[in-house]
Image (cartoon, rainbow, N blue to C red):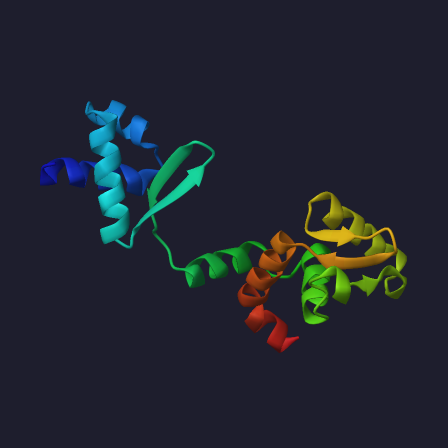
Length: 156
C-alpha cells in the first residue's frame, strides 16, 4: 500500500475509531487491504490500537498518556464517589476472592446501599452467606481509581 493511503488511514484514526470496513468504504479500497495494513500498523506503530468487539475489530490512534487521562478525570471528579471509596476499601482489605470476603455486618446502612449498587453493576459479589468481595472488573476499577486518585488520597 502506498504511503499516501497509510497516512490517510492514520489521519482518519486520529479523528475517531473505525473498523476496517468503514475505512475501506471511506477510502474506496478493498477491506482486506485495509485490514492487512491496519494489522501491520498496530504491530509496528505503538500509537495504533486495536480492540476486538464481538466479531468486529476497532482501530484507533492513542492520543493521551494514562497520566493525562487521570488528570482529566481528577478535573471532572476532584473527589472520589462513595462507590469508588467502597471499591478502594475492599481492595485495601484484600477482599478479592470468596475466601477473603468481608462480612456485610461490618458496613453501615448507607454503605450497604452502595454495595447493592456496586453488585448491580457487577463490581462486587454479595454471597448468600452475607459476605462481599470484588469481582475482576471491580478490582480493575479499584486499581485504576487507586492510581488516579493516589495524590488526592495522600493529601487527605
